[in-house]
Length: 201
Ligand code: ADP
Ligand code: 5GP
Image (cartoon, rainbow, N blue to C red):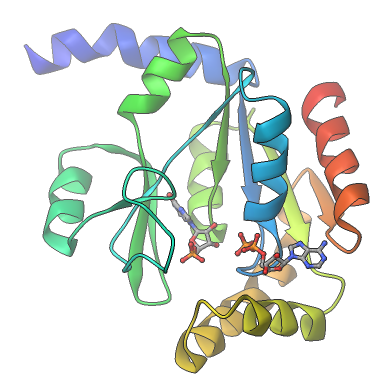
């Protein structure tokens, strides 16, 4: 029954996403992905579906469940993962992160462009599942600037910042796996480059 119901939906999602309606944005923590995508969504809210991920990390000050993330316990996350509830998932800096698949079905059905903001391992999974997805890497002007942004954001402990900088080096080294790299130095210029890539490339 379950498989019978889901099959047409899965065919729909694969067909729609293979037509290039899935955009993956990846880049080190603190590079400015959230800042860029928030501005983009403010400008073009009706054209995009921004996927809200699930995570086992604790909410930061100001974050709300169901807005920035779905904040789940590890047990809840693993249950969803084992039930096939994620398009992709990965462990990052000691926490699990994943893209719930059900809202993506609904967005595709509405003809929206689906936007995922995920780390490298998840982006690699999506590259395998959906080779036609557009993959964009956001790079920092330098590792020093990245560290300053992480510290100035004041959301993470020294230990978390250390883990994030460790990941950042691995992620920057993998930038050539992506279709396009945008350096987020001047925010407005990076935003223009992102808009051009999403709407014209
Ligand atoms: P990410 O989502 O990639 O982890 P954020 O969007 O939270 O990163 O940005 C990290 C910090 O850097 C924030 O404090 C943000 O205001 C700042 N920031 C983002 N883009 C720029 C930029 N182009 N120039 C200077 N600061 C920036
Ligand atoms: P943060 O804890 O700073 O919000 O996110 C840490 C990292 O996890 C970032 O690189 C972010 O892009 C990534 N991330 C957020 N959601 C997901 C997701 O659903 N899947 C994967 N693979 N990574 C995610």
